Amino acid sequence: MADAREVLETMRKVARIRIDMLREGVTFHSKARQAYYLREYEEKLREIEGLIRRMNIRLVYSKGNSVDEPDGME
Image (cartoon, rainbow, N blue to C red; front, side, top):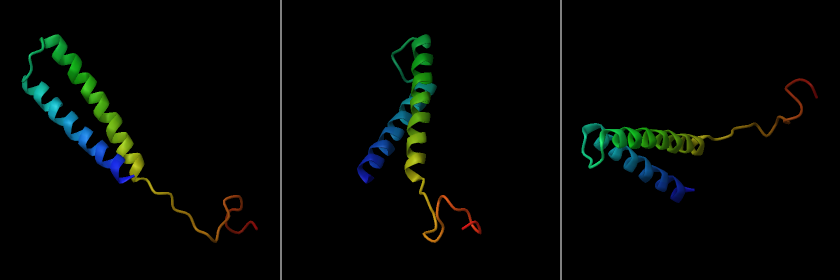
């Protein structure tokens, strides 16, 4: 799991660098292509960050309570 997280972190850094470069105009693309790639990288960055957030979620439950029986209804 750590390897997947490291890959996602690296992908996020690369996407952020490319977004910054496109916003600063450091590109050989025309303005239309620059805008297109900026939108695409921003969308991919959102997807990557969503995956990283999901990896951070931990499910917590009490071993004393049954999933089928709420508290007080045994």
